[in-house]
Image 1 (spheres, helix red, strand yellow):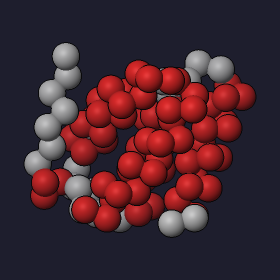
Image 2 (cartoon, rainbow, N blue to C red):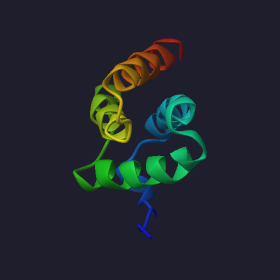
Image 3 (cartoon, helix red, strand yellow):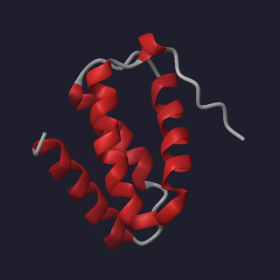
Image 4 (cartoon, rainbow, N blue to C red):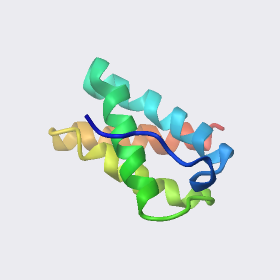
Length: 88
């Protein structure tokens, strides 16, 4: 299993809240495995550097979208995730 513990200083609390909104979108597309996929993707995302800006969420959304095989569904997820961020 992947180590999903994160140094608190690597991601701002505001970004973690936004990640949770994006994560909620993924559940609709992959089902109950979504929390595990989100934890793995978050770990990969933060390993590439400190995350402090909302525009960096695009990379996180793209990591999550890779778990959706169907191209149309993947596109729908990306749209839904961006819409969830706009509603914040």
